[in-house]
Length: 152
View: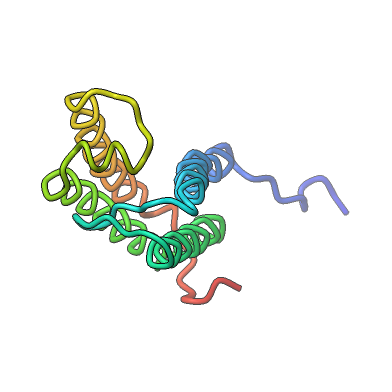
């Protein structure tokens, strides 16, 4: 094999592969935080779920996160739009929880020991971060170049 026959990846392609690594970290962390709620109460869309309902919601959220993580690894185009939808649903759930649930009830359920205003500020910051994550995804949509709808 001659030296000229070897295919060398350009610098742009090497950097291209590393843009999605922090995104994978965000969703792995989100999945771990969701799994840490297993066995406790789970706030979702303005309602506090307990027992089996909470465990089913946590399980479904974890499976969805796992699917999204694998889809990011495969750079699947369908995953891009599912990520954007997932982020909108998560931010809508956070705002619904903040508006519809009493803050003290949510703080008691989660076991947090923070003042009400800190919880409200943190919830709003998470909402803004989800929106910024959607902007990031939209501007890096060309990174998702696998048009297959299957993960294999």
